[in-house]
Length: 271
Image 1 (spheres, rainbow, N blue to C red):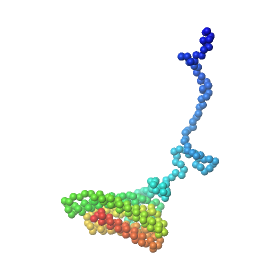
Image 2: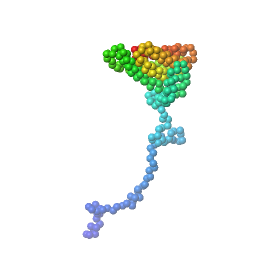
Image 3: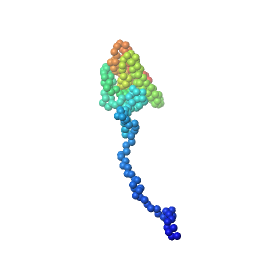
Image 4: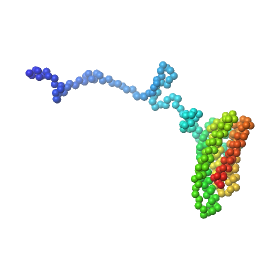
């Protein structure tokens, strides 16, 4: 009986400890050495072709560059316009000073290598604030000069008119001249037209401070001088693009448009 009980399996009994076999398991463990992880994108360079092969994830793919502005996708990309603001203070001051010289005619040659939109954006914006604020100040001074007891309030409508007139003129007029020159078989660059028109408005910024003086004759002298100076600056530079007599009317029209803008500033904001 004792021998029969001794032959019974006892591994399932409570408290029994099965034998631990580690020798075979240790043989099956494989030590994998993982190299430095580097995620890659497909497809690889197959058969020595001109494909780009494996590329590390995170590095910019080849051919990735900012959209050129002449591409329709580049029109909606901010990076396309960054090159037109790549100017330093010395360049901007030089171009601002050049806009005061009415008979130069070399502004296009100065900006040919690096035309900018600084004048179109920032000079126009500065002029808008100058017209709106100083125009209200001029109205206040004239009103207090004639009637001390009358009340005065800031006219917000000056801001709306200044935005529409300045931005509209600085954007639409150069665009119209660009298409007219192209139609007459000239080959200008639109960015140069915008650049020149933007800087041509700068003379009206310091003139706005002088127009605050409540003397009507002095105001008309200031605005006419500024308008003639700005108009001649635009006309003399457009003249460099004229190759025949057919475009001479364009130069004259550009001068009178600039003069008309100056008179509009005087009549509306400094009446």
